[in-house]
Image (tube, rainbow, N blue to C red; front, side, top):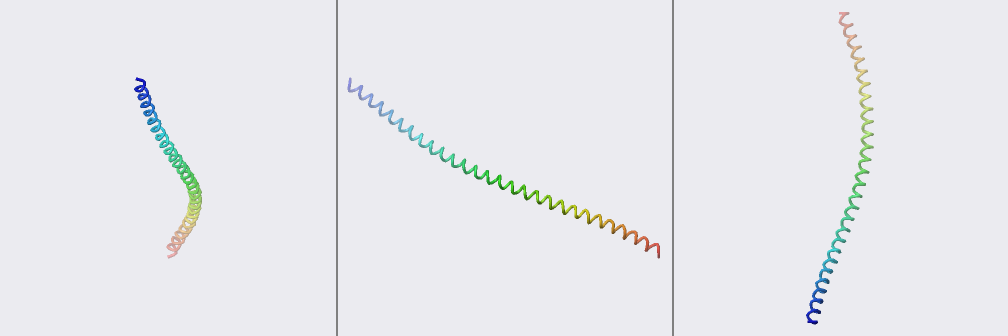
Length: 101
């Protein structure tokens, strides 16, 4: 009876040891997974920072492009004003020349 009880206790201890070993393996896997997640998060943060920097550069370039385009539009507007004035003068000259004939 005592031997049988000791055998049952030993089997229980072996079972507990096996479960503890499984838990330790699972914990090790979780820790490895967490380390991978942390590395991935670090990469994502780095890439996010790169994207922010790129957007800042694009905003600056876009602002410069807007200024350049506005300057060109203003110049075209001035040129059109001159063309309109010259065309008006030409029409006036043509009308005058026609009236002389």
